[in-house]
Image (cartoon, rainbow, N blue to C red):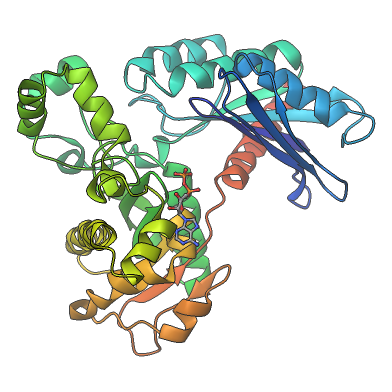
Length: 407
Ligand code: ADP
């Protein structure tokens, strides 16, 4: 079965076509700056030259159309008929408290995703445009939605409730939902496999450190706490997002700077985190690391505060888990920054964490980076959200195909 994975962001669309028999990537690419004056299209087929060009993408629908045309193209394409794509897996950011696992995208499910748009106003509407476009251009393919929130669906009540009047949960469903679920699930399963411990018997801390970042506590194969909350703004300090702050700060900035609440929220989402802390030096940890090593005071402040927020959550989650077997680092920073991993692990020695400095520096792919005598094993594990989506999509589509054939 060939599965097309579609991951629509606010102004981007990532895609990957995977042959599930051997999980080989047949083609992948990225549509960027959708809706802007000049958009960009990158496409890489297996064993052929790809495309990398400026293009006109007025909306996500036109991007989906271009992806399909390119996959079918005589020169650079990798399929000769659309019917070869049997299923399409869509990443859906917010599934509210309805969806605990992937779902076939029936009209009812789509209507529920639409209702969840209130919870993720930037993401869910574009996810829906992607779904509708794929349904239009590929009416015969199985459409599956895989939710970022689903893996955190079983958080215990004490972890998902906020200390606010209970009626806000009852009336408005205000609670912790958590995000990056596919990544936390994929990386925690891989960690268990590598450790050789049954997944159902592990206590793990997963640090997904990308531009957006979240840390989660995984016990016996279930997420029992996670740092992102009602929205992806809560938790550790991120590239441009503030992470957790005292809510009163919103009130004060709004009054002092004569800004609306939406304007302050925009600052917390786009101009805060390491970007804001470094006096707008950069949101990219590569730049912050370079500045840190070159004694740039803005970079040092941002790096120290960023690392501090990470160790605080790790400490909290080791407590929540009652001890941990492993800590895994993943995503852009977690996979690539030996410096951040070292700065974090050096402050976990009280837990018996001992870093293997050489292994940390040389980590490539899935790597154990703790020393033999470390009480908690530490890993760098590349995440693969697209593959996780494709596997879930294929499983559900196959189930449906089997059921249909038995009717
Ligand atoms: P997202 O999917 O949230 O946009 P990614 O997981 O792709 O983010 O991570 C992107 C971030 O990873 C970049 O902004 C950068 O800060 C960081 N990053 C990538 N490579 C490195 C590296 N070699 N060293 C440090 N940070 C890196």
